[in-house]
Length: 244
Image (cartoon, rainbow, N blue to C red):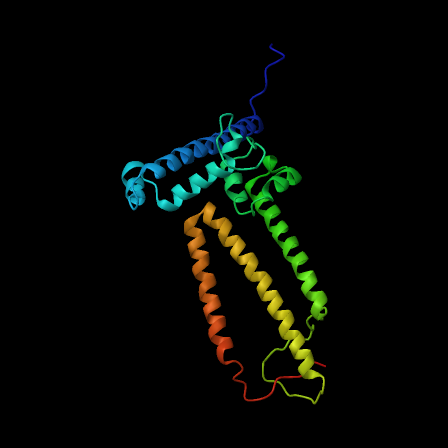
């Protein structure tokens, strides 16, 4: 019996498959960089106004796909041994194509630090997406602190949620100031949530354009409904209940 032989089990086979898949994704990024480099060269040679036609007839790419591949080349081209990319990033040959696409959403100059801090090369797509969401949330919170210090920290929302907009009222001379603070706090929440929504749509654009468009339309419908409602609000025939 050969002591060096490895028993073929479902777990061993799964490991081999996952390794091949990961290697394939790395090769895909390398190929995408090379395609982007050639697209960039071709764009400089094609006559003005003929770029879209050339793409469709010659390589069956849409302009958005070509633009994405060219950007991949510009941002990660230096990763290749003979790379001529314009990125200031250190070489990142261990990234997969999907990881590279997700990281394009980061502002220029912050990507290298994020890669080093989070060991991106070992992350799954889901882990990287979560890390990017956590980063955006932390950044948003830090940006809000100076503004809150200027106007004073808004009090937490009351736990006594209004079951209806038309409740009996009681006289409270401090109610206007309390409602102003409530409006300010709600507007901040809406602003933060909208930032998270646009970030998610940006990531979806690089991953699945069909899903992105589906979610964008849903969000647009919701926002249009909110805008229409707030335009004439409130229609209440009775005053709102004062916050005590």
